[in-house]
Amino acid sequence: MIEQAPALTEVGAGLQIAPNGGRVLDALGVAPRALASRAVHLIDGSTGRNLIRMPLGEGFRLVHRADLIDALAARAREVGVAIRLGRRVAAIGVDHITFEDGALHPVKRLVGADGVRGVAREYVAPDHASRYTGQVAWRTIVPVENWPAEAQVHVGAGRHLVLYPLRDGSALNVVAVEERSDWVVEGWSTEDDPENLRAAFARFDVPIREILARVEWVNLWGLMDHGVTPQWSRGAVTLIGDAAHPTLPFLAQGANLALEDAWTLAASLDEPARWEAVRRPRVTRALRAAASNARNYHLSGVSRVVGHSALRAMNRVAPDVPLRGLRWLYDADVTGD
Image (cartoon, rainbow, N blue to C red; front, side):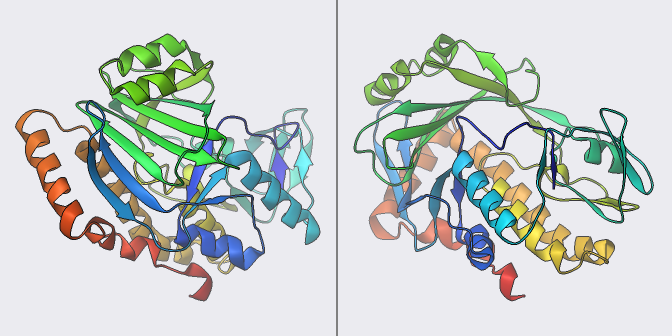
């Protein structure tokens, strides 16, 4: 494994691991520190009024990204995987890679898991363009006490905010999304003034404003719709995860789909075209489902009144109905295929 970072660290990011991704972790013998997530809870952001609390079954976990990375790295080393840190790949050739220092390394098969802006993606699909979605997102973590073990989505006109606890429940992961016409440089490392985040949600209910008042740092990025990369392989290189199919963060499936990719590709490493043909329909369906969630979270006017009334009615009689429609996603077990 080759990683350009000098150390395997990740600060300030949470992940929701669903059962489909969790089954891969279990099969690998990887058990990061996690909280069990009990529900997805939709709340009217401006009033704090409950809309629907959808109970989750077993297997939904709330994980700090750093804890997942540590657990994966530890397990990889246990089974003999060499992890080379601080080595940046500058270019990819037909049968070799070139490091930033000019050194060459021969390769027979290269799996590109370096994201949408990585050198592997550029090699496999150099002309694949992206589209700005008209939305930006902030991410941060704030201290809390006694936060419920659930993913809360506070929805509002043109914006929403996702909250869930991490580790021992003393940290709260915050992802806030706002519709905006101007484009922001894509990436995870753009720092922003916390006051901009607070201003965007100034009309939300008091408890949310109190949470945002604790924010000391925040990162901002523009949400891009890349779609599914036209091809996932070129020569010896095969893309997985965000390098192959970056997903919008409205279904919490980015990490889960990447875990599925890794497991299934390992069984078909010498047949990447066949693997891609099998994986592509499922991934495409997941990306479409994520995109539709953004629209549902940002309703306004009459659509908002009607939609919220329907959710409150469903919450009284059958709060599990919305998640039944995602059983095709969560119930999949790629480790048993």
